[in-house]
Image (tube, rainbow, N blue to C red; front, side):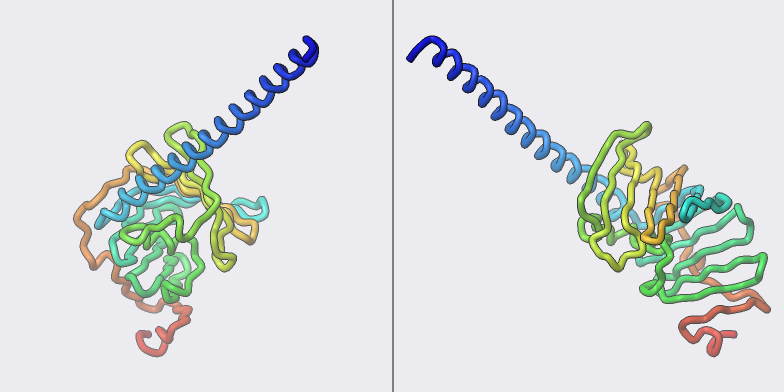
Length: 231
């Protein structure tokens, strides 16, 4: 074999070696990323699935097709078995409650109540009722991605079911596994974003907090026969 042939063969071998190194290295990075995603998911699930109650503050921003609505804020209380209570300070008098079976939305300004079974509502706040004890991210989402954020790590995923009202979610996970931000992209072109603060795990919470009494004279929009039985 001539010198030129030897040199050409050596170059090909070096190129193949570099290609193999890139492929192996890429596979290692992919495996490491998948492992890190799994660890992040496990951290979030472990934090909330072992909690009996969670209390925190929230800020809520909503837009659809580029049109933003006024921001809202208040406090959120969660309890196992699908119970939740959103007390709004902005706008004042707005209340969103789940007693584990039904969802109530009350607006004091209109003195109006809406009620719907928890299992039937498409309100994006409702799935948060199952944050405690039933959180299984891989059951609901697929194609997970993660990237660094200013105060933690962003975990993103696409909805597995086409029937879900949302298409994609992203959550900012802090070092302790708590969710500090939640972004929800709806199939209707909507964007809903929550900022959570002052999270407290397992604070004592009275069960009466999740019982809703219809105010006197309130207009009731009833989807489950409430008007006939309770008005």
